[in-house]
Length: 309
Ligand code: ASP
Image 1 (cartoon, rainbow, N blue to C red):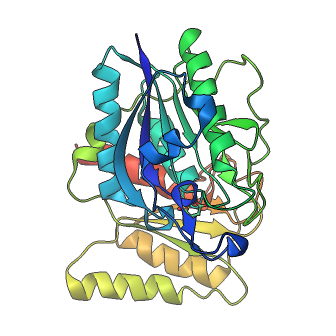
Image 2 (image 1 turned 180 degrees about the vertical axis):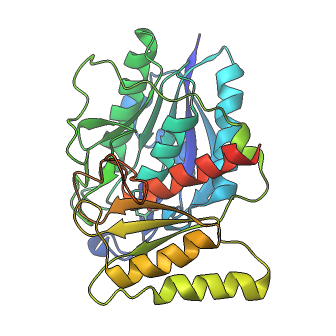
């Protein structure tokens, strides 16, 4: 009989507080994924397997954990006994991992990410219901041959392509940046099938995010360029979290021109919650589309990696 594989990475869903009445004072990533599953009676009858891939607060997410996750997913894709994958994750960087998986996955099996805004010990813990929702969504998707990447939280499902954290503490903290949630048996957006090989590079390119704001005069950009030169390291890319629909302070733009002259790839995203920066003919700086600045950083990393090969 086939099973849903649940990959644990930590997050608040696995968090505990010593005083359940003060659940904001908790530590993320304390319970194992096996403990999370065992604590949910609704999952007792489900065919599940678990694997702990990492145990971190997702604010500390990074390349090494993505490599481990990629390896575990590749293994599950090759395992006939696994029909679908659920990933328990922290909410803070969930949109980055989701965007990465949407780019790399080939769509052979469904992958569903889930998380929680309250630790497991809170009286109003949302993790158990979110985990049940994620498993059910993954099972239903596997049954009808769906194979994309989705996110299940607070009773709603989002495509990994659209999802982002939109509230810092509400239980329903996620939205689609203007895109609608997935309904019922709606087909999921096709993932991009770039393959997992990019994750095998020991070192990812260095891509940083800078924000345009009042008095943004490019000081950080020039400092980064000077540091790269002095240390013999390389700044490969910059994402600008622009004002509005992709505008930036003229002084920041001048510094970015210096960065571009030094070989840095620069993309524009928007610091506004919805809409992103749509590409237009004659753009002086490439636009990252609907991606958030953090997601645009993932996309630029992938672009730079494919240029390396
Ligand atoms: N800091 C936590 C994390 O991202 C927040 C959460 O999971 O809600 O791991």
